[in-house]
Length: 371
Figure 1 (cartoon, rainbow, N blue to C red):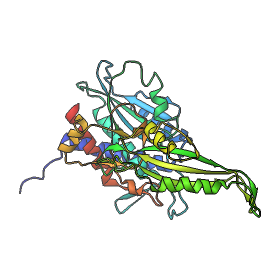
Figure 2 (cartoon, one colour; figure 1 turned 180 degrees about the vertical axis):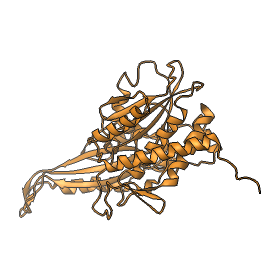
Figure 3 (cartoon, rainbow, N blue to C red; figure 1 turned 90 degrees about the vertical axis):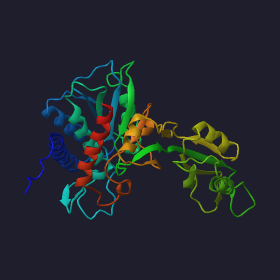
């Protein structure tokens, strides 16, 4: 009988890196890291680098490191994922901070979103870290506050000259989120509007006042029925939802002079936020104020080298309805990672152990084509 085939050196290295990645993920699950409270997990990631003798840097609760032979004259690829989590919901039956491994799954808060992508990207960074022949630099960044789209996460890093010095050539970013290792080439933007309808207060028992609720209802009906004509091949139509409504008074016998409501708008790449706002303001009577214009829709060209590498590897392209740090990165970015977005923020969150290893293998395969 022929001797069984021996694993290649590359396969052996990936297996070692996968084991280290899973061990690190278990440490991260054990440590609460809610948005704005990521101090301890930032420390754990920093210690991981220190134990490997890799220079690393901290900006707030963000950690980053560069490949050993970094050369500023070369373009740079950003490998980014986040280490903050949402708070566990009340339906958990397991301890969210106990990294339980069972039936091929690793349970725990943040295991899927985005711990698996975070450590898989880190392992991929380590795979190439000490190569002197790379055509691109690699920067690995574990960012904070992604779950709340906070200003002290990836955006804070990109505005810091130590992380993003003038003249740096960013080629593209790989943003690690659970996409089943398919390629999210486009992502809907998020526009949240605070809307206020104004009337005149009066006594409910008399024919007094101008009821702000009735005014708000007319505008809400428009939001509910209007359809933006431009429909994206990847992201579909713009979607508007009324999510909150309230008046300033709680008395049953007072006609309210003000009624406020919140509109959640998911914008495809065919509209700018300014276009969306112009259309809305020309059709409603309420005062409309956007909370932020930061989380714009984003896309990467289908003929971009990293997308072409993914297509050659049998990956598919799709448009993501959810926002991520991709929205805040001002150069081409591809969202892709192990895990499944459908598990994010659910009770008893988990990721398959094999998904992490397969994620590392595919990240390495795609980067190998470019590096």
